[in-house]
Image (cartoon, rainbow, N blue to C red; front, side):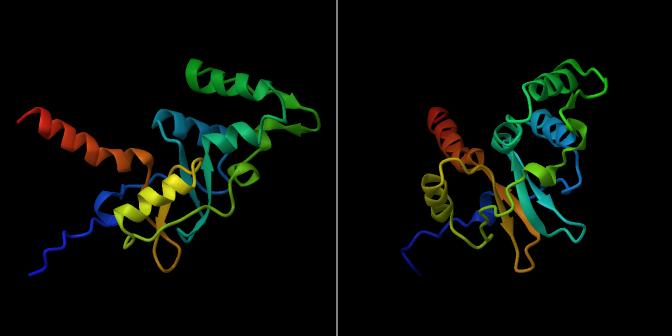
Length: 165
């Protein structure tokens, strides 16, 4: 018997039910899903279920901010006030034509489910703006996702059990 504690793997803490979008999804639909579920971001997958990118709140804000401030107004109207009016036209490009593919990060940081919990912590420490991280298999299919919330969950459980003893 080994005295070494068993290593916790990402597969033990990752979220397995992953919501994703396709590159063709409108940025409004992606923003709605992100805000309704209180996500920081979500994977973008092709029709074969393979990861092709990630879209985050940061991407939506940063890559669309140069279009026009009315983008923010449209999101506020669609998501928080739930008005269903036509989006405003911005110059020669209608904002309603923008898709996830236009703003997604095409080279997302990924991890494998066999990576350790410590690997995930180090990855989040090294990449401050990354959240969440898709977990992919050998065919680059999304099998889970890990976020900072997943990293903090064990601390919450430990704190809860300590306070109730």
